[in-house]
Image 1 (cartoon, rainbow, N blue to C red):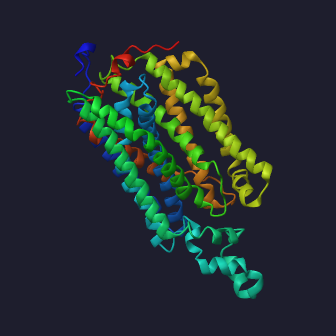
Image 2: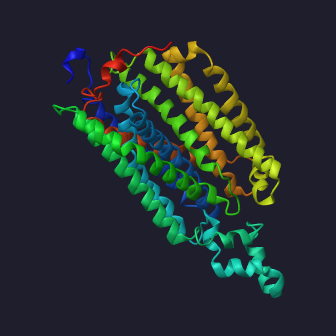
Image 3: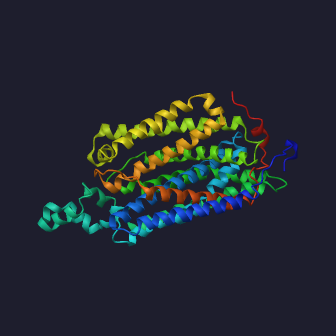
Length: 435
């Protein structure tokens, strides 16, 4: 331990780790079990609804872990000091990725259930797409096939994406993303934890810094392509060149919200009370504000470019979300998801009032879930007007994946200090002041 800093607080999870592991496991079993009981015992539509809700909950938990991974990596790249006392919490958060991703593999099961169709490009083989594209040349038979595939207004686009959007490629890429993220999380947590007992921690610092820069590129590519595969390809004819950035902005925003919540909870348990102070919460609040704005900017840019180009393959994405079912949700995302937190987080008082900031963190996380739901669920209904798309299945699966996430964080929390006590920048972190 860095004796020059006179650290006297409690930086060990102690019995909190096994308690939270049990709590997370109970939530996971109850939530996923209840969701499966409600969603997998009905007809084909009920099962399909279940898997769409499962994807929303999975992406919610995944996004927080990915945001924490970026929080960790970018800190090493820019050699920042203000977040050192928060970094171990971020490292433990990203260590949830293997558990969350393991259950994310459940999204492959619909490929083998003929009653369920999540990614509809899977049902359009090269031959089928070719036949539909040339329907006018082959008469009634091709027209019948076109009627069966009326979910894709422009099937020729799907046929041109077939080299990328195919089952084997999707499964291979998904496994690759998950393995890469798990390795990155393990590497950075392992090296950081090794600092706690190393007599000379400089070697560990340098090894993390050397890897961090190229890992930013790896992170950007894997997170972007994962968002393309998991979410954007739900609408097989739609595409957006900035969708990966949109997903990243929401993920990093969610991770900063989680760090506020986790830090406040740990301090309420008597942990980390002298090393995370108002200055650190202020900086987390700054990031929350900055990425609320950045997320809104990317969302507007995507909408504006699609509206201005007015290409049918793109505009139907928003047409689905502006019908009677989803118009209210779209308005809520604009006003409650962007404008309100943007205005609220402008205030220095809000960012420095830790209890108020915690409330805002919970609120913004709820809006992040709303955003993911808005991105994913309209692809199930495909513009159909329905009374209420949100139900108990969504709640149960969200609870289940939150439980998995908590379990994934807690399983490593008892193995090392909650504070990187030998980090050479810790002293500057503890003396950090905002202007």
